[in-house]
Length: 257
Image (cartoon, rainbow, N blue to C red; front, side):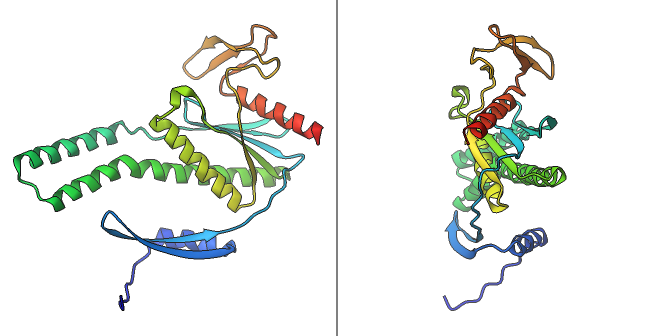
């Protein structure tokens, strides 16, 4: 085009980029394209990490099937800590978006709105529905990965992250399932960037890790759901059951090795 275009990079984005560049990516590329009438420029950093499965790791279990949102367990011969992350409440955003849609449609029916103004309303609606969730995913994943690296250094072990991918039929096609899948993809990318071994695996919350029987709800409180196996007597909070499955799977794989 024979033109020079200068684009100001926000200070926060520039600080993030400098940190990533200091971590020596293998390849750096820039993509320029148009989306919804806007010029989009993306800086893409690539880093290849080949990591072997640690034999005596810090076990990190990321439960994405939880109705709570995201639950993370840290285990090294005993439970170190459990953290819970709930996605932001989007109800207020949905109400705001519906109001914008109603105003836009009324103005359109009255013939008092231009196509440019329609596009502005549509842009505001998309931003209201998608912006906050993407930011929450990025911030939460970054927080989890920092915690994984810090606890692993403290215990002198390499982390092994087991990610329970959502497959519950009740979530299929829902906005929560899309959020959890996006969360899993971003988490796996960041873990790979830092050379942390991860694997997707099925970790059950309603099946007994001892005998494989169906767990039954024994007691429910505001913050807990105690499950019990009618066959072997195993009992635990439903949110903790996936951790027992992860320990069992890792122990089995280790014995095979």
